[in-house]
Each structure stands twice: as structure tokens, then as C-alpha cells.
Image 1 (cartoon, one colour):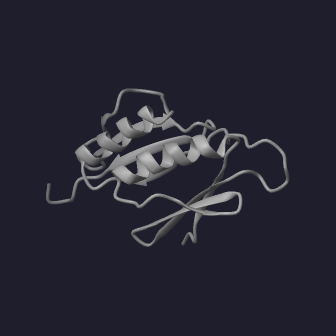
Image 2: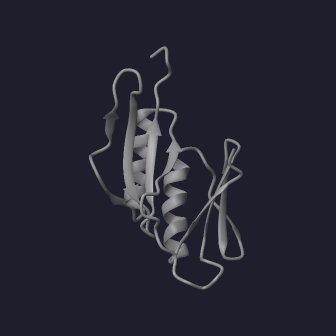
Length: 128
């Protein structure tokens, strides 16, 4: 359904440091630069950050959340901690399990250096 996700960044260097740390903990290689953008390719997905082409400041979208899948609770926690150490900001509840047995998931919410809301999520397999 999606070809890629691109977020705006006002401080591209801070965003690259943040996403290299967080996405690296999820198994992605460091981002590759293309002019004023960086791209991460991992598990068939493309994620990128850019300074806005129109020259206006990047702003975080109210109500928007970008979710990244983690293979385990440990991987989600590691990515969360790496992201916080790389300039992210913890928000909402502490990372942990949400939902009931039908829709149980481990969630960790934070904001990137540009204020975008990020969620690291792990869903256990149906057999778990």
C-alpha cells in the first residue's frame, strides 16, 4: 500500500543521528544521503527525512504517529533507549504492554528531534 514515508526535519544532522540510532537497533543500516534527504531501506521498506524543499520550517503533524515494527520486546526497548540517547523525547506512558488478549501489543512512544511522534511496536505471534 505504501511506497515510502518521508518526514520533514529542521535539523537534518540531529534527525540522522536519531534515526541511525533507533533504526540501527531495529536492524537497519545507516541512512544514505541524497542531496538534502536521507534514506533508510530495510525489510522491503523505505523511510526518509528531509529538509522541506519549499524552504519553510518542518513541523510535526498534530494527530500523526509513525509506527516502526520491532521483532521483540527487547528490540523495541533497545530501539527506544537508543532513540532517547540520540536526542529523542519520551512521551505518554512508559513503554509497555497495551490492549487485551485479542489485541495485545508492546508500545513505546517518543518524539524525534523535529517533534514527530514515533511509536515502536511489537505484536506477539498469535501462538504466543
